[in-house]
Image (tube, rainbow, N blue to C red; front, side, top):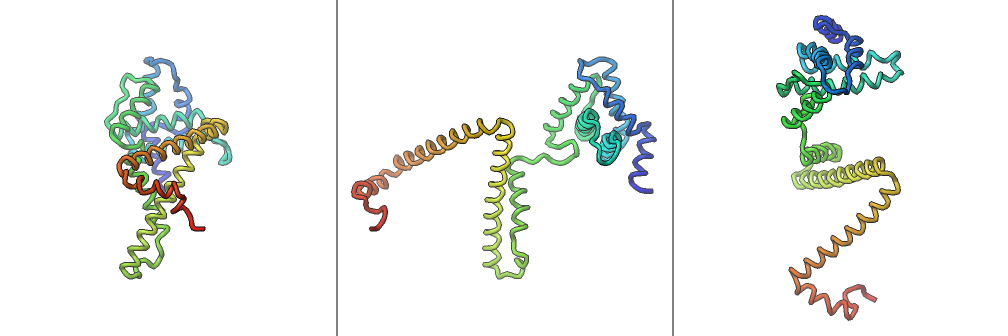
Length: 241
């Protein structure tokens, strides 16, 4: 028996079908909580709790897929959004001991997100990485691709240099990639005109920060500024004629 067939049997044993779940998800509403809505929330999540997290998430994916007429068709967007939200609630229930008793849909989604965030996990069960951990992971992944294939055969000194060079190259590559991604998000969210204006402000702030750094260096090391002053006055030290 294939895994897919086993899952279908598990769904049937739980008393649900992908098409039936899709129909229930379509009826989820954003109105204030009511007894009917509470019952609907329970009807969606109770069968899933009888499955392993991975199997329940696979069923929600199958629910979305069931709304497509052919492979080329797009799925029902309402079902897609609701299934994603159901996955969030379901993950919180499985991983955080979260309970949706007397909750409507919107309240359950928000509370589930808060529960997952507090525990530091995603609805899939993956650990949520900090910004530092994300950067370190990205650097290590890029670094592996920049190491020479014969690194283990290199002398120790050459090996250390190759590791240092790869780390530096990976750090620069990740920083550039993150910078481009951030720039794209700004342009996409705020438009080209605003982004150009923002660029002007950024250049101005950078210039001000550089001037502040120069001023602080002058205050901390006045002897350097005194030594440079004759050179500025006479023009010496700039370039040879």
